[in-house]
Length: 220
Image 1 (cartoon, rainbow, N blue to C red):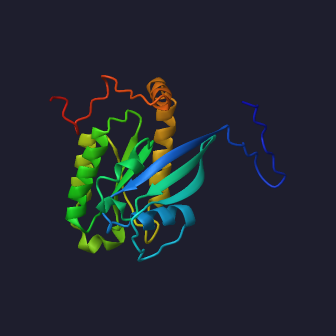
Image 2 (cartoon, rainbow, N blue to C red):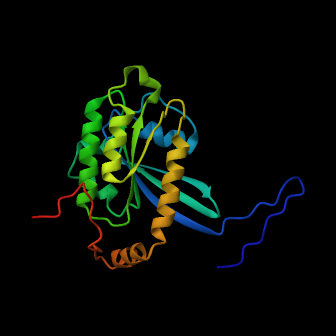
Image 3 (cartoon, one colour):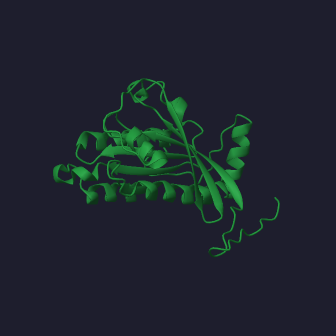
């Protein structure tokens, strides 16, 4: 890789150019009512749309952010209603490097179904995937049905990232994507993950013995 030269501005301090670029394929999962598309649009365009028409298929968005000296290009796949067709949804999260499972903090059923999404991801046995559980709609905290403590206890058991956000106000939206970017950047540079990517390119699966997770039974 070519040596990076510092970008010195006469108007301010020295700014270092990104040392490397990382492409991060991320999928958004969750019920149709939880605000996945609104979350993606808030992150990518910093806009909020209260009502989005759910058309079976997938929306594709991109967003670049810098994490330290790394430029991370998020390639965001939003199922946009496709979650109603469970047999088709796996095509979107297969080979993903990161996933955000969204639930509505004012709707307990969406939290329960988010757990099923997580279980399904663990069943795919992707050793390199980084997962975050996101409670959306903190702007509706006066009608909260899922406490922060309940969700926090669950994610500690599952060893995944967690944050409550509001796509409407923008609260914590950039923060959760940034945390995912940091975590994924570390993961994709690990020796196990490098091997996993190499095998994946050959159409093979890497399932090391250390890929144990409490969300998946190891028997049977």
